[in-house]
Image 1 (cartoon, one colour):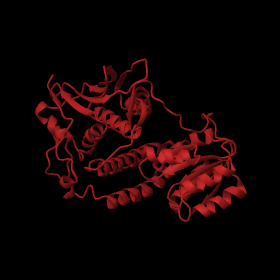
Image 2 (image 1 turned 90 degrees about the horizontal axis):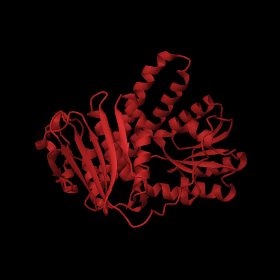
Image 3 (image 1 turned 120 degrees about the vertical axis):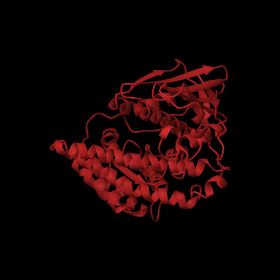
Image 4 (image 1 turned 45 degrees about the horizontal axis):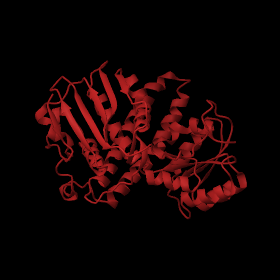
Length: 388
């Protein structure tokens, strides 16, 4: 099988991207933030329609289509945000002790339904023991998600995809193999180059900007690792391999605080929605009321503190970027007065849910951090797990 190590893909510098508009720092980040803020309430309304579709099945196909389209736009924005940060020459990642085995298992579980719904067989081989590494959990999980999505897209119906984690001496490898249409060996070097114009060559008619694999190569390089691509030729499948150095001993992981395990029911609760977007407030409020909850909302941090102290909600859904007091300061003030047993707090991140956001939320007593784009879909789970 032809093999080519593509751990150092060319043209991944700020200068090479300047002409395309990617890598423009604050402008790109602000644009992505605003687009996500527009999409998040649309996703909430889609979930509300899904609830009501139980009484009118004619709504289900349209609801599923909206979910797919909103999800696709959200994933594209994630790729643009990652590329804007990671493809800069001065990009850095904060590493923490991780169990690679657990990270791979969790990422696969989160994406398993997509394989089942599209009739692909997913085989998973993991070692019995933890695989300790140093790395960024969110970035490595994103790389693996992109490889799984790539395999899903280019494997025929009822095809087979195999994910395997191996430990080979001081190195761990994550292999994603498929039996799909494959890639011509001479096209392999193009896979890891970002594409920003219609005239750029597309390997084997694969569409898109080529950001996923370009950023994957960059993430692996920033971890001191590499990514390899292999192909047996057109129609014979392909394989991507992630290689990382293992660390000595078991990872010293600290379990992040979270809501109690879902009980499968949505008992009546008082829920405070804190967000400076009227659309986000309204969409979450309507869905919570549809689920039988008592809801109040606040536009800024100071208003949130007043309502929470007087009303004592069971659950607070808290945006990060708020007028007057940001979400971190609100959470810190509430946790000083209300222990987790009396009030659960969920922080909603409008931007990419990176490790730094999770650590900041944990430091001020937040029970869980979620991507704002997923708020509507996660509401039943959050209500089942919140503490009364």
